[in-house]
Structures are given as structure tokens and as C-alpha cells.
Image 1: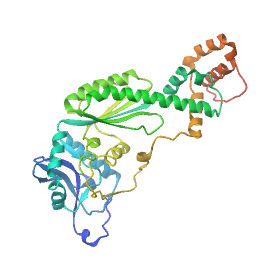
Image 2: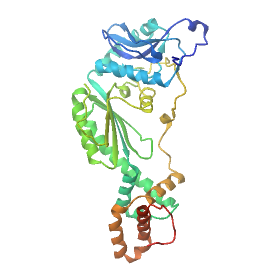
Image 3: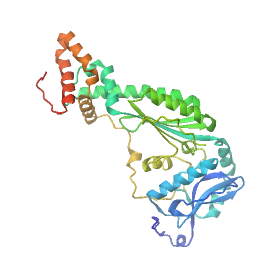
Image 4: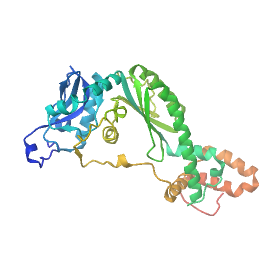
Length: 248
Length: 120
């Protein structure tokens, strides 16, 4: 099957094999399965570290949908077996030697320290969305200046009032969700909502031992707003959101 | 290691061990994760990346009109009783309240017609 690879245009890269890096873990791990462009994954070790890698035909490859899914899948499987520093999609080195000389060797201590810090923790992703009709009904019920205006087609002022009420409601509820969950986490990254009816978008770095408590809190939050808010709760994930800018 | 959520069978809490859709995976691995200097070399093609750039909609007349339309087509049957009571009690509020009742009627009959003339 075609794996979405195009030959490199640089002559000396045509014959060489480049190395794709998924992340870094501790040495001595055995990883199986395939990854980007269906290549078999393995490790490149140096000191206390092991880079999770697979060969790719060149430095310049064009990734496809399945490659993106493969990257996440490899990390997820590695994470299920131990601590891992997830790399962003698309990190390619000139070869296995370069993985050592340009990554593992010069950054050994930083990576090892980060790996230590991430030991025993996981990322939990939390999103919440308003159900349109339900939240609008609440807004109408709670705001007489809105309910009194209903029934006029093309009423921009009415729409503006609704938008303002929704923004205020979202801010208050998002703060409530963060307040409930943050005490259970070591760290959190809260992002701005991206769509009109998105209520909350955040990632929490949680000790494995705290996941059960986090689950319980999530259940409580979701039950409380049942019928108006739907929660999407994903994890435990490799700590993608908590390794950014750790190394510079 | 993964802890399954204890039977919240309902759909108000969707729990998954890993991201299920491509958009969610893209969000996780293209936007986040460790970046090592300039070694990111892979070109991503043929994938809908719009999800990444989908930022919250900026306030505009269009947005407001959409909200106005959305609240006006709400099925307000749940609050209809209260609305009618208010209408009967407060004479001067008749005009405004009529709108709400009318909206509820439309939703009930499901004909979706928008008439400016006051039906009762």
C-alpha cells in the first residue's frame, strides 16, 4: 500500500534512511508494532534514555491521516507500559546516529529530569459543550429582558443579549469546572473555548493514583448539568500538554 | 491502569481512554508535545486542518441574528404555563408576552410559520 511517501528532492537524502521520533522513554523497554508509514518501531538508547523511533524513507515525507493516527497510537501504547515524553508529530532526524548525537546526548540530563517528573502522572482531557436548546432555554428563563423580547424576527438586540448572557454563563461555569478539578491535578492547561457552545476545554496533569478521584468528580460534574451540558473526558493520555517549552 | 468510568451509561459523560476522532488526535499531536528545535520536517497534506484554526466566533451581527433566531425557535412549552400567567396578570406586558406565547404555539404545532400578526 502507498504510505504517502514522496522521494526527497535532495540527491544525497534519496539513499539515506531518516529516523522518525515519537517520544522519549526510559531505556530497556521493548516496543512492538508499526508506526508512521507502516514501519516497525524500535528504540535508540543512550544513557538512561530511549527514543521511540521508526525508519522513514527521507527527511521530507508527506504525512497522511493514517500516519497521524499512528503517531498517537505508538505513544499511547508506549505510555500504557511506562513513562513517556511525547513529541509533537513530525519530528525526523537524519538517522539513528543523529538521534543520539543531536537529541539524546546533548539533552540527556534535561530529558532524564523531565522523564522523572512525568513518572506516574497522566494527562486527562476535559471538554464540555452546551446543548444548544437546553442552554438557550435556561438563558431565556433566567433573563426576563430576553424572554420579554422573544418573537421578533431579525432582532439583533435580542441576539446580542443572548450572546452576552451566554458568555457570562460560560465564564462562570467554566470557572466552576476548573475550581472543582484543579485541586485533583498537579498542573492544568485551560484553553479558550473554540465554538459558540463550547463551555470548557482543558487538560489536567494527574497522578495515576488520583485518577479515580478525578473520575468521581467528573461524574459529579456531568450529573449536575445533565441535560444541558455534555462532557467529553479522554485519558489517561501521555502528557502532551505538559511537555511544551520544557526544553529550550 | 486505565480506570473505566463506573456505568454512567447516559451520554452526558463520554469517557474514552484515547482520542477517537482524527480532529482530536490532530489537536493533541500537532498542537502539543515536545518540539525539538527545527527538527519538525514532516509536511501534512490532504488533512482537514480547519479544526485547529476554528477559533471562537467573533461577535457580529450575523452571530446575533443566529442567536435571536435560535431563541425564537425554542420549544418553550416547559415555561408556557408561567408565561401565560404573567400575560394574564400584567396587562401592560401583553404585547411582549404575546410573542412568547406565539413562539410556543408555533413550536407546538410545528408549522414553523412566522407571522407578525398576533395569533392567539
